[in-house]
Amino acid sequence: MKKIRSEIIAIGNEILAGWTLNTNSHWISQRLYEIGVTVEWMTTIADTEAEIIAALKLADTRADIILCTGGLGPTPDDITKSTIAGFFGSSLVTDEATLTHIKNLFAGRNLGMSPTNIKQAVVPDNAELIFNPIGTAPGLMFTKNEKLFFFMPGVPGEMKQMINSFILDIISARYQLDQLETFILRTTGIPESRLFEKLATVLNEGPDVPVSFLPKITGVDIKIRISRQPREVYQRVRTLCDQIRRIAGKYIYTETEQEMAQVLGNLLRTEHLTLSVAESFTGGSIASQITDVPGSSEYFQGALICYSNESKIKDLEVSAQTIQNYGAVSEETVREMLSGVRKMFQTDCAIATSGIAGPGGGTTAKPVGLAYVGALFRDKVLVKKFNFGKDRLINKDRGTMAGLESLRRLIL
Image 1 (cartoon, rainbow, N blue to C red):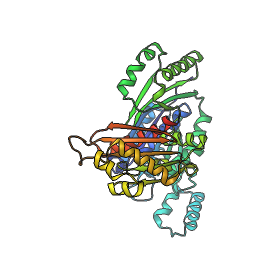
Image 2: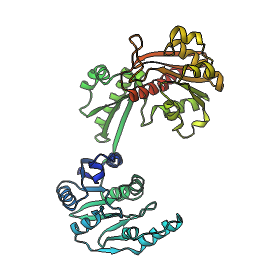
Image 3: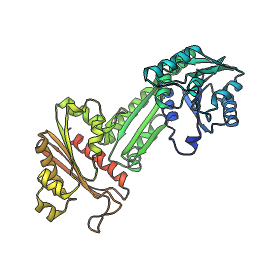
């Protein structure tokens, strides 16, 4: 079976200038891998005729599928469409169906159209148009030298709609694609180096397949992506995953792409448990991640950001004597925060955090990065001490993950 290679080209001066993050290429790559298409190259270029032509010529020499995003807007600096027409020997014509669609969009939004909007109905005459149901710029498809070229708007929502509704189906119908499967084991609470050391023996003795360790601020993902054929290798990879679970199981919180808040939410829903949160140095990050999960209202009752000592004492009934004796950043204070927030919201579970996020506020006894993160599940309480580091935002992220993970483990 021939390996199908693809290239993703992101067109936009704003990407090269660092004004816009190129999330499109990342997302497209993931979707292509899911259907068995290998992404060999990602290219980012300026919105100039010379750069676009050069990139298309190079892609034509090495890729079977070329997917381009950006440059199809109505403004004068978007010259991609005219350049594409020249590259494929096209003339630009007005497509009446596209023009009608644009007019209907503006009428539905009670907006007036300008001549620049009408320009988006002007397309190369030999392109196959890809309908854009939520925007004004249609996608374009060309076939050249038995290769597929796709051009899409840079607006992420519009691009994703075209990929999901049209382009993946076109690619799948044209090529005989190998079935790929991804094994993922998401871990937290163990550094990448230590995780690799624990798994070194089984990895060395396992099948000769690429095993990726993908570290993040809050944990490490282990990913193995392979074909289901030959079957013998596929079965050996499944055995390898069993061995990884046996060795590193307590650090693995999911074998899906779900984030920790979603994993914990599923557990709370299954066990019919309710949750409340009291946050100090994490500043609402835990509550934010919990409520990012659809349906979280089934188990999440509420949160309190008790940033000051006064709030801890007044709202959560933390003893002033406890804070005086041990400090706000202490195990004793977090234990009382857990009790107070559970009482406030009448929940089965609670999470509480108190720490010194930085960059200031630390002392010799209690340096920046010191944090206490606690979880409560009915009559069980767990409070852990952490020394995260000096970066404020990283400390908040790690404290958030620690709170969610602590409760997950406590329930299990």
